[in-house]
Image (cartoon, rainbow, N blue to C red):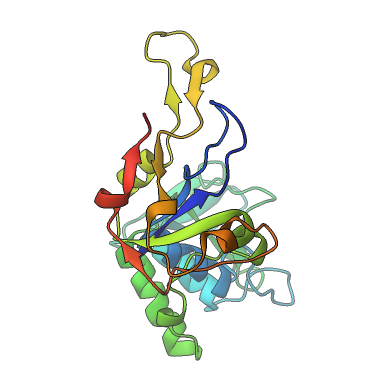
Length: 237
C-alpha cells in the first residue's frame, strides 16, 4: 500500500499550487521507515545515567540495521571501525569516524560506541526492525500502514491509497515543471509547482465533494478505497 497527497482547492494561477496537484507521495517503504523511527525513538533514544543511548534498545537495534558502520574508540585519537554487513574491521582516526557533539553514542562510559557511514533504509532492514519491534513490544506493523497525517493535514489535503511505487517514481510524482528552453538557473524558471495531478472530483470516493472542500472537516478515505496510479495520475497540460 502507498499514498499520494493531493492539494484541495487552487491557490492561484501557475506556478502556484492547483487543485489536485500531487503534493507528496508515500511509498510503503517510506511509511514503514517513518513509523519505525518514531516507535524506536531512532533520533532521540532513551538515555542511560551517562546521557548516552541505552545499549540494546530499539533505537540501538535500528541503528545496527540501517547504518553501514559501527565505531568503538580504542584510544584518545583512534576508533575501531566495524563494517556491519560482514564484520570487517580496521582502525581509523576519530576524524574519520565523524564523531562530533551531535553524534548519538550508546553504552556506558568508557565503553561507548556510535554508528556512521551510510544510512540505508532498505525494505530488508526495515522489515528486520519491525520484527524486533513486534518481538519486544505489543505493537504490530499491520497497525502502522498509513502515512502519519494529522487532522489539519486532512482538512486541507486529500490522501488517496494507491498501488506501491519505488523511490524514482516517488520523486517523479512530486516533481515541479521547469522551462526546458533555458539552461541557466532552471529553479528560477519553474512554470508549474507540480507536474502531476489527479482529477479527484470525478472519482468515486464515497464521501460528498463538499465535505472534502470544507476546510473545517477532516476527511480520510484511505481505508475505504484504493486506486491504480496509472489510471488516476496524469501529467498536467
